[in-house]
Structures are given as C-alpha cells and as structure tokens.
Picture 1: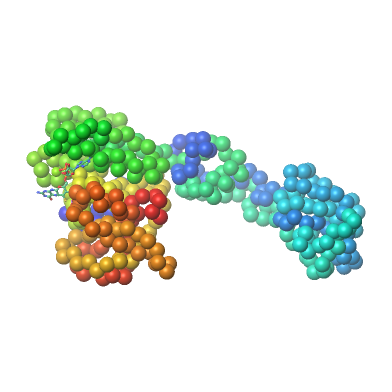
Picture 2: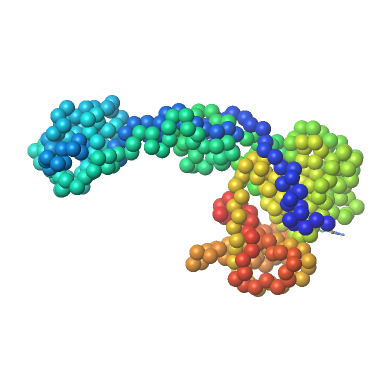
Length: 398
Ligand SMILES: Nc1nc2c(c(=O)[nH]1)N[C@H]1C(S)=C(S)[C@@H](COP(=O)(O)OP(=O)(O)OC[C@H]3O[C@@H](n4cnc5c(N)ncnc54)[C@H](O)[C@@H]3O)O[C@H]1N2
Ligand code: MOO
Ligand SMILES: [Mg+2]
C-alpha cells in the first residue's frame, strides 16, 4: 500500500498539460492560457493625464504662478495643443497629455478665478501626474505567459489587448460513474434497502467549482455489464471518475474489470483514512480514478488526487495553506488522517475546528466541513494550535 506522498507523486507523474482550444473571451474566466499574450500597442498607449487639473509647461514655473486657461482637454478627445506656453489647458484624468505641456497640477493645488488658474506654489516638477507612454509595456512585449490562470485581473489585460477569442487549455472530457445496486436516482423514493446516488452530484459540483462540466451515469454491480459499459466509456471520455466498487466486497468489481480491460493500475490502496481503497489507473492517454464509495472518502480523494492530476492538466492553482488544529486529537493508526474541519480566522490565524462525525459514511456532517487537515501518519497525538496542511473542499471556503 502506498503512502499519501507516494500516491500523490504517482499522480503527478501521469499528469501533463492538456491540448488547447480557442474560446470566446466571455467564457475564459478560470481557464488556463495555452499561449502567451502580447501587447498590441504600448501601455499606456499615450502620455496619459493621471489627475484632473491643469497642464502647463514646467519651464514656466520659474517665471509665473498664474496661467490663463486656453481650453479643456477631456478624456476621449484627440490630442490638443497648448498654443501659448505661458497659458495652461484644463485636463481630465485619462486624457492625452496636450502637446506642448509636460506637467499636470491637480485642482486641489490651484484656484480658478475669471479663467485664470493660480498655483498654490511653484514646487511642481516636469512629468508629475503623467502616466508615460509605454512605461508599463512596449508594443510586442509579452504581457502574460502561457500557463497563466485567467482571474479578473488577467481578463482585464486580455480585454485591453482586444482578444475576442482566447487560446486556453482544453478541458478533459469526464464521465462520473456511480456503481452499486443499492443506489436510485435522486427523484425516486428509495425502498428501505436503497439510497439515493448522491456522490456523483457531489463530484459534479466539485468539478463545476473548478469551471469543468462533466456528465454522470450509473453502472450496475454486474461484472459483464460493467465491463461492456466501461470499455465504451474509455473510448468516449478522457477521464472516468468512479465512486464505489473498489474495496474488498464480492461486488466490488472495478479493479478486476480494469485489469481485464488492460487498464494499468498504478495505485490501489493508500495509507490514509478515509479513502484507503483509492484506485488510480490509466490506459494510454485515458485515466480512471476509483474513489471509495463512502461519501467522505469520495470527496477527500477527489481533492487529494484528482485535483492534483488536474493541476498540471488544467492548470488550477495550488492553494497550499496551513491551518491551526483547534482541538487536541489522538489518532493511533499509522496512516494519514484527513480530518474534516470547519475553518475560521482569528487574529490572522486560520483555525481548523474538527467536525464530529460517525465516519466516512456520514454524509450528514460532511456538509458542515469546508476543508480537511492532513495529519501525518508518523504522529499519533496532535495538540491544539499545531499547524497542518489544509485542503479546501469548495471554492467559497478560500
Ligand atoms: N473488508 C473490508 N471492507 C471494507 C474495506 C476494507 O478495507 N476491507 N474498506 C472500507 C472502506 S475504507 C471504504 S471507504 C469502503 C469503500 O467501498 P467501495 O469503494 O467498494 O464502495 P461501495 O462498497 O460500493 O460503497 C461503500 C458505501 O458507499 C455508498 N455509496 C457508494 N456510491 C455512492 C453514491 N454514488 N452515493 C451515495 N453513497 C454511495 C454505498 O452505498 C456504501 O454504503 O469499503 C469499506 N469496506
Ligand atoms: O477509508 Mo474508508 O475510505 O474509511 O471510508
Ligand atoms: Mg465495497
């Protein structure tokens, strides 16, 4: 059985960058750029007035403190010219600096009376309050490298560059499969021995949080039927996510079906709780993730392993954070303990409060968790205040 570290290293080994596709600018938030973005013009594209006020020729400061206002240069107007260097032009933030001027003095530093602007002092410098053409980037400069994650600031740069289509890393096609004859559709009223197939919706939502769409399907606990269905799914999808059927039960057919279909199993069993029977395999460029069926195991393994695989493939950011355990814990098994927690902040510290639950099959208390702390296998007593790596379970929790 692999340790968590060995399992994660194995996953990373099989994760590589996805293919690329061009998509509409509107749709590119939370995607990874597949190619660099270059400036189509200087940034800023002209000497930009940075304060509302007046523009003068700085040389005149040696001679005068009062300036006749010739005209106004508003933002969006073509560049005007200061005709008489002894005068000034009123200028607005965002306007082109008028020709023949080199100094902007804000309204707060002048008084205007009868069309004359009087300065509070002559202590002003050339090029003050002017955002110089090309100071941030020159035409042709790389503004964003390939691999950049599109967040709101990046969208602003893409918009400024006029990119209506954006080349991004393509999403893998994913099918989420539930297994198990006890499962019924959520709209059904389950019989006493049945439950609703909730895990697939949890996984679909976790993917949606990452801006990835995925379909769901259900497969029965029947080996020949499973084999036929998975063979087709492997042909049609890049990645199959399974919940259930990977442990030791008589009907846990996934490991043997994978073997018979020529799927190489790289991980089956990890020294962790929950998620011990976790399985990961591949067939060429196709990947299978077998998340143990207990709901907490499914969700924890999604975040601990599938997100790691996606990190390279899809480019999601690794938010490596540490949380302060908020309670003493004793855990005597030599395995990593992924402990469900509710997070909060206090005096700038991230506190992680363990959630009481009845084990990995307890879906009721799973909903109270927004993260899990990974307590290392070599330790058995964990004290309040100690710091451990934390993994968030959903986007709104970080
Ligand atoms: N003899 C052993 N038994 C078990 C072991 C073991 O090592 N030896 N491991 C336990 C652990 S740990 C886990 S976790 C589970 C994992 O089992 P499977 O991956 O084989 O999953 P199933 O047997 O199919 O189901 C387990 C449990 O989860 C429920 N489930 C499954 N899918 C869904 C779904 N889509 N929505 C809601 N709930 C689901 C299922 O009904 C079961 O209750 O095995 C232990 N056993
Ligand atoms: O480890 Mo199982 O994954 O406890 O529920
Ligand atoms: Mg089982």
